[in-house]
Amino acid sequence: MSHFAKVVNGKVVNVIVAEQDFIDILPDKNLWIQTSYNTTGGKHYKPDSNPMELSDDQSKALRYNYARMGGNYDAAADAFYEDKPFDSWKLDSNFEWQPPSERPQDGKRYAWHEDELKWVEYTPKEGTPVEEA
Image (cartoon, rainbow, N blue to C red; front, top):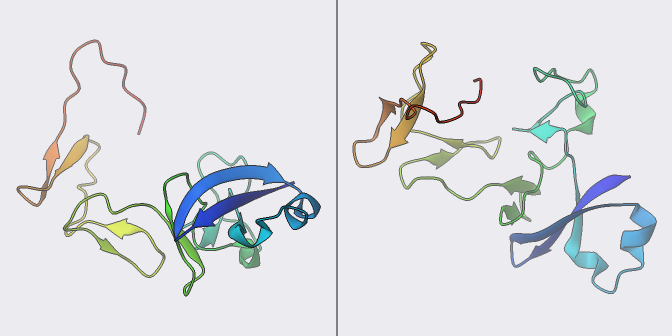
């Protein structure tokens, strides 16, 4: 089984798991584009690897990123990508949004503040569940 995204006017409106034979019989089959759940930033990762581990066969990388509902598809580049998170961020050559400055890598949590164009340390409120980074 494969993942397919339905794209209308450059926007991903649906993502399903299906066989190519099923897609081929749909009346709107030309709107469905295969996407890879294991592709991020133009690289293919081994399924179910945690932490993510690059696949030995990078020819499996498909359309730069996995298609997400509400995301975008650039037909000329044959690439899926997310909506722009902040006005100051730029789309890189792997179709990932990059901030104007790198996030600090000191083990602390940070949030981007667009008004100040910088990363600001973030401390969750007491009692708020915190995911491991």
